[in-house]
Length: 87
Image 1 (cartoon, helix red, strand yellow):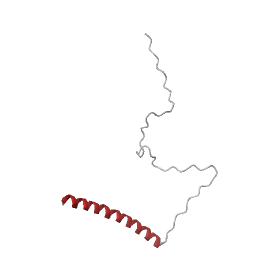
Image 2 (spheres, one colour):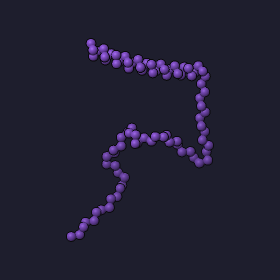
Image 3 (cartoon, helix red, strand yellow):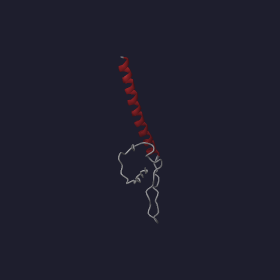
């Protein structure tokens, strides 16, 4: 009895079930890719933003206020849950 020869597998690129999950570490590259620059052009780097002393203090104060508000809401919610639980 002759052995039956298997057909050669030809990959046509179709996807039956996509198993990739958005947001998994394997699918996201670790470093950002820069867009390609056409040959012969000079890449211009953005100049750094220089803030005055008052602007810098204002930015730090705004960030601190945002984090403080978040902290107050979280600890207040936790306190409310504990108060209702032990009531």
